[in-house]
View 1 (tube, chains in turn red, purple):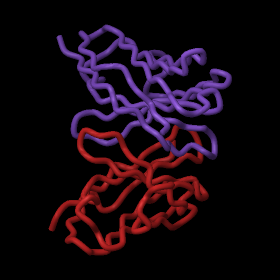
View 2 (view 1 turned 135 degrees about the vertical axis):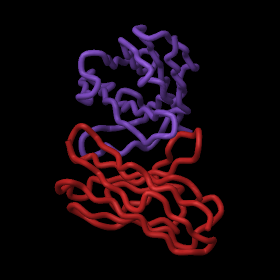
View 3 (view 1 turned 60 degrees about the horizontal axis):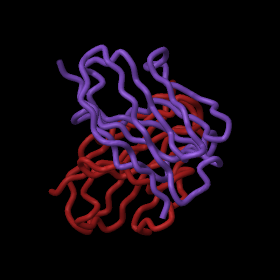
Length: 107
Length: 120
C-alpha cells in the first residue's frame, strides 16, 4: 500500500497568514492526489484534485502543487472558516490511502 | 444539487453485523462508483473500499477482506455497505462518497455520515 505522510500534524496560525501543508507519498503517484477539508463531526469537503485542480466552488485562496512524491496545499490569507483539519489522499493505486491529517488551529 | 443521503445511526453488539445505505440523487448514479470511508473517534480517515454502480466491480482494503461486502441497487440509486463480525474497534463514523474510480478517484460528494457504535 502507498503510505501518505503529512506534515505538520498541527499548525497554529493567525488570520491572514499564509499556510503550507506538505504531503509525501511512499512512492510516485504522479499527480493523483486530492486534498480535503474536514470540520468536527462533518463530512470531508473536496478542495483540490489531480494535485492542483481547484474543485468548483472552492475559494481561490486554496492552491495545490507537486507531483511524484511531494505535494503541498497552500492557503493564502487564512480566514476564520479555514480553521479545520486537512487530509491528502492518493488515488494512483488501490487501496486509496489518506494522510494522517493536519489540524490548523488559532494561534 | 448532488446529494448522498445515508441511513441513521446504529448500535450493535460485538459479533453482530451492520448494513449502512447511501442513496444518491441528482446525478446519474450508474455512471459513478461509491467509496466508503470511516473515521474512528478522534482519528483520521480510513478508506474501506469502492464499488462501481455500473457493473458491481469492487475493491476492498485488505484490513476488511472477508467481513466487508459492498453492493448497489441501481433501481433505487442506493449503495450498501455491510460489515460483519463487529468489534469495538469498528465504532466509527461511516461515510459514503461519490468516486468515479481509477484516475478519477477523488471523492467529490459525500454523505452526511452514519455513526455506528459497537458495545456490549
